[in-house]
View 1 (cartoon, rainbow over the protein chains, first blue to last red):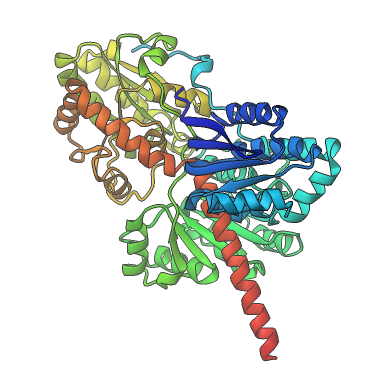
View 2: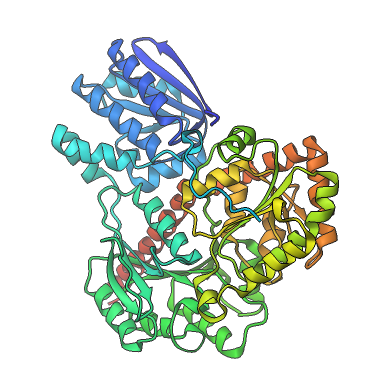
Length: 118
Length: 435
């Protein structure tokens, strides 16, 4: 099976940004979760998951995020979502998970929200 | 002719489980109650019920319903979906626990009992699957009894939208649309027919595509090996077999295809439709096997006379070079099998029934004349001769299929359920203000 998800990890100050490209679904969610867990274990208690290039997300992708949230919350950290595209945004809104994973369109605002602890 | 392999087992093409959100939430309940509560308080709640046939009944609507139910449930870990299953009186169906009420198809009272059950339940919204044949009464009119007695908002998914309905068939659809908040069709042409022929309110009709399994593209060659069909050019058709499928026309096309591609093999995958079997037995299949014998192509056509599980079906589809729906009914407004083939990114040849005409537009497939072995042979040969054309058809089909993956279609259904409920709440609030 093709694995249609690109993952890049970078730092923005103390915050870890995980940049995804492709589809976050049952085929790719486990790999994303591994990368997220590695990032958290490397000290990244606050995460930005950039979804500007994510076309689709399914419940596995949401499950991976919840798994990541469990780990960061043990360190009083948070996860926010950056630049979710319409179909992905719709998933967060319809499930209500936008109240758990705040959605931002601007990276600076996302960083400020994480640093401010809001 | 040979029988296709009975069982196949290749982990490379198995569809991964997708229940991760529910799994994570269940796990949190014991591991992190604070986060569990946060999710429970934050996530949207909805309690949908579904009225339809349901597995283990072997019918396309039953499979469709299970797919909708499970796909929606994956996004709603704090909800408990309900199925009201339609079944024949004399059949015993070992349903899953999710089936909380059963309607006996020909027992009119049981439709009212079902409405009472739903009215008294925690259910917020009812999703009704409609095909004339699954309900009792003339043209399945008993479904109207249920909808008239139902106090919960309902949406109906129309699996059949006839262009030339009888007066009674027309009345039933019109009444269903009137009694439901929204009618769902799977292609735009279905919506247009509802407006033009049935005169329904355009604001009450929405289009949500037929869902397809989440299958990532895979090399057909590797799967062919697992099926013992390496080096064969695989042509296939799957689904419940009945005379409307037009399989005889592909069989008649095979000699011409074999002249150009002697390695071609046509796989006919699926059991005879149980409803058909009950009144004419296997006479259609027998007619097909006689044709195969007469043409002397027994080594190039294979049957798998079973209702295939999803994983197995997907494996056959992944191995397929050309998928064919040679159906003979122009009015057919949906085809689950064609939707699945799109989802697997297959090169598709089809007769131009309404659903195929729309979903295979813009280079997503090749349309052929009805009842025409010559036209079928010509198109299949064109694809097998031209790898670039094949790849272009496969890519276009796959792109379309991704949007129609069940996980996306579930979001469409869930979004619609919330929209209907919000609208109803708003209307109730406005009514309260006026009084």
